[in-house]
Amino acid sequence: MLEVREWAEMRRMREVEGLSIREIARRTGRDRNTVRRALRRQGPPVYRRRPGPSKLDPHKPRIHELLRADPGIPSSVIRERIAEEEGYVGGKTIVDDYVRELRPVFRPPRTYQRTVYRRGEICQFDLWEPSGPIPVGHGQTRRGFVVMACLGWSRAGCGALVFSKELPDLCWGMNRCLVFLGALPRTLVWDREGALHAGEGRPTDGFAAFLGQLGVGWHFCDPADPQAKGVVERLQGYAETSFEPGRSFVGELDFQDQLDRWFRDVANARHHRTIRAVPAERLAEERALMRPLPERPPASTRRWVTRVPAQPFVRFDRNDYSLDPRFAGRRVEVRASQRELAAVALDTGELVARHRRRFARDLTLTAPEHERLLRRLRVGGRGEVDVELRPLVRYDRLIPA
Image (cartoon, rainbow, N blue to C red; front, side):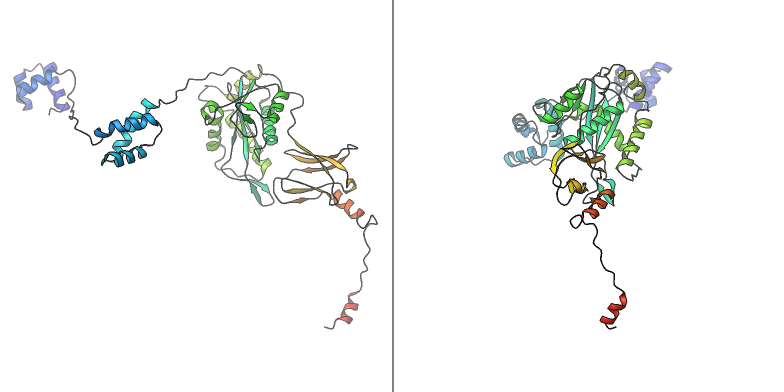
């Protein structure tokens, strides 16, 4: 077969040097008919091997039947079927390659259109789980989640650390993100998180109350459809590769502080490749078309009513928090937020307790004033019992050395 290099050389001799076919044949050692065919060619010579029969050819109709019945059937199962039913003895690769080329005929792949966002239109939310547990003090760590938010037009993002997927924690995270962004979008976009989605695209009662207080709309993505909120998904991927590596945290407050600074100084200050702009600069434009935040954000605290027991403690999140012992037997409303736990007497409105929220587990947290009151009220209110302190010499006489 004539090589491409030889063909190019023959063309050069003919076109540049003007040699005859006879002279070209003499210089190249090829016969004149080969030279003529080479000069008549419009393109370089290509070696084409004549395809031979394949071991898979007799089994292709059966493969078509299997894919028509179930377009998602794995190629390994197809290979097993044709081997058992029709005696296929060929290799694995030839089946995989054929099924890969044929499957889109029976199950066309999903296609996507490019989405264009309007200013202030949507804010996408999602839960991102850091790769490691978060230190929470007392030598303990705890699994944490970050409520991530990203505006569609400006790509400005933020995040709030929480320690559960319950509705109050998610609402607190959304409140904090909206305060960070500084305005209200028209629509909040979520996937079908259990605490938020009641089924068929409807919010739960608690989430609907939260949305109603803000006066915003909602949209739930279809199941297994992360592409529908790809803006915040890509932001999460950026956090995994840019925020987490090489960092250490003292506690949950330190994690949140470092996350806020990363968003302010890195994520929102970078030149975004997709929008070809800086998110922080576009956020200033987007806020001008968004509604202001309400004066009082929607409540996101846990509230319940209990009676102060004889042992004046209330249990929350596997921790015991002390209550004022003077209110024993009376009913109080307990309010637990991400930052504190407080209790208020229902009959008088007096403050019964206020503690900083602890995320470590199995702790007993007693306020100093509650400890002093317990000492005074001990033994029927008579105060501390006086115990006689005897000289040790008396014991030495009673107990021989």
